[in-house]
Length: 249
Ligand code: 4GX
Image (cartoon, rainbow, N blue to C red; front, side, top):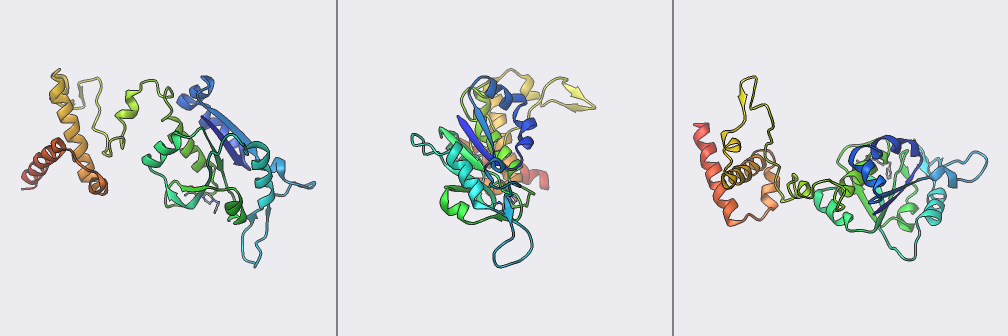
């Protein structure tokens, strides 16, 4: 899979995407990240990329032509109609379902805005999707783009060493992850749950499923409302609810 990133701050992408899993994925040619400097497409001696807003008011607006020219030169492709995503707080809020859908694409182009915003004609000319990483305001779209790339790239087969790690993810089955433990068995008086030491894999699976359900119910009840539960999960959930009532008393 490839990513084209249109940005005014190409240097920002150097660290995060060249380390760890995403770094390895690029070395192994599973992932190709093309950083495109919008400033290279700005005209005039000063290569200006922003300007004052029509109608007045504070702040600067990113000009449309440099972004359009960069996209035309490096991203427009007859063979591939990959989405052009604008990172913005006005986009649809990113979640694992969107991440999974995007990972099925051959490539993605991601536009990172700075300043107060873009000339809106960026939207009407090239943007096909607008994504927000959450309801808070960043200084630019670069960090948001890196979050998106990281989440999407790890879904590409082969990027994570162990294919199971995606299947066991938080959210993969719509529930939060269960608790994990490793050595030592005892740490400052806190013990690893007995069942995990039992070697009984049916019991271990059941415990993990139950802990996933319990965490989701207590921490993210909003996720429980949208999830369709299996008969087995409904049964486990009844036990959990009974157990929680007993503890309250
Ligand atoms: N999730 N920002 C983009 C500039 C901007 C404003 C409007 C286009 C249209 C953000 C977020 C985010 C701050 C990135 C404003 N660009 N991006 N930037 N939350 O807050 O994605």
